[in-house]
Amino acid sequence: MNKLRLWLPFIMAAILALGIYVGMRLNEPFKSSRSFFSFRTGQFNKINDVINYINNEYVDTVNQKSLVENTISQLLHQLDPHSAYIPADELQAMNEPLEGNFDGIGIEFHVQDDTIMVVSAVAGGPSEQLGIQSGDRIIAVEGKNVAHINISNAEVMQLLRGPSGTKVKVTILRKSTGQKMVYSITRGKIPIYSVDVAYMLNKETGYIKVSHFADRTYDEYLNAFVKLKDAGMESLVLDLRGNPGGYMKSAIQLSDEFLPDRKLVVYTEGRSRPRESFYASQRGFFEQGALIVLVDEGSASASEIVAGALQDWDRATIVGRRSFGKGLVQEQSIFPDGSAMRLTIARYYTPTGRSIQKPYAGGYEAYSNELYDRMKKGELASSDSIQFADSLHYTTPGGRTVYGGGGIMPDVFVSMDTGMTSQYYAEVSSKGMISQFAFDYLDQNRKMFAKYKTFEEYKNSFTVSDDLFRKFLDYSVKGGVERSESGIKVSSELIRTQIKALIARQIWKNDGFYPIIQTLDKTVAKALELIEKKQVAVKGS
Image 1 (cartoon, rainbow, N blue to C red):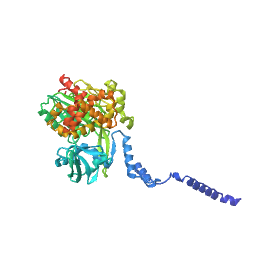
Image 2 (image 1 turned 90 degrees about the horizontal axis):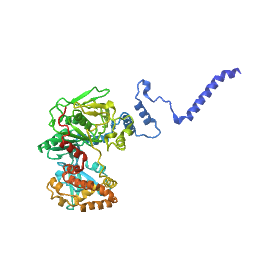
Image 3 (image 1 turned 135 degrees about the vertical axis):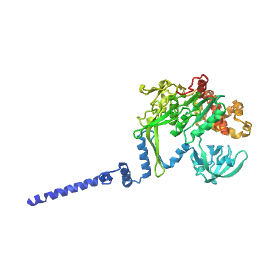
């Protein structure tokens, strides 16, 4: 018995050790105690440690690069809808519109009937200099067939784009002569313009459309302004509809053109960034004269800086629909691998002190669906459904009430025009029937259109006759769209106008397209009406 008492502690210890061992073996797939992380040093990076642990110990092979990039992207999305991670292979494409150029051969194309069609060669670009023409078919690149192989737009760009100075061999089929020609094209810098068009709406009113705010937007605007001023412009319609923004610097430069010296354009402020104010710094070329700015739900960021500054100083009348509501400022940081992060570092405020950033507390998905919610609530048809809190009301020096907290509210509301749309129009439009028909018709009748020496001749003389419209209807049936007499009746004028405008675009580009398509534009018509009735801002406060 004494011997048993003597050995009992050792026996119990052995049983306990055996139990621990068996327990560990039974739970081995769920190992949870390991001194892997670096917190023993007192300092650790939890995200890096987790990713390294997964990379080293996970049951299957993982793509660490993808894991890191997805983690960063999700992390930034948790902050706000506009902080973002940009992989290295996407950064250049995202920066091209802002930088104002890309490297390539300089053509506008589309893939039709499984063939790469040249819509136009960029003026002054490598392709135009070699004689490549509208209507040419690209049938081979570097000797490799590219016709009738189900090639995508992305694949075409991948083949034709490349660093400036490099060469690409392109085989062209010219339908008008049946000739095949091989061109060795030296790629170059191809401009991406941010001023889409500038023309006179009537003898006294000019129109300038800015599609985005890039590095050279201000220079492009000045060139357009001088052209219109020489044509007799006294009033201006500045179209920022659908403009998603871009460089704040360019927005400030453009605003400066309309505001007197030392007027505040915008200021920014963030938790770690003290207030920074930006002022008009020189005499602008159009500080007086009737000025209307057009906005809609697609106008965002830098567009809202311009519209907000001109509205706050009573310098412009804002016409259209409530703008998007992006009042956050991003700063871009480049990583050593060529990827980038755009982090929101401040909010911007208009001269009266309003932030126009719409709420995003509901998360990324709710924020993304906000424009759809506006449509469901009827806001695009009527401004009555828009409600602003009393605390977000501001007063301009001229006594106008303006609003913050959700975009720029126009002074004059114009509803979305759906009077000529129908299910039939939606089908022919979504299937590309209108643009394809316009391209084919011009392609088959180039000699006929050569008689129009100027755009004005074409605009005043060419009409989409009933016979031509019937050809379009038959063309659409072959394209898989059934005829709908009720839909055709509702949308006939819209389709005819688009056919005429799209033919003009192929010959005169945007200078031909916009003056025709905007004959149906209710918002432009409203702007002209306000100018004619002198119900528009002429000089700021």
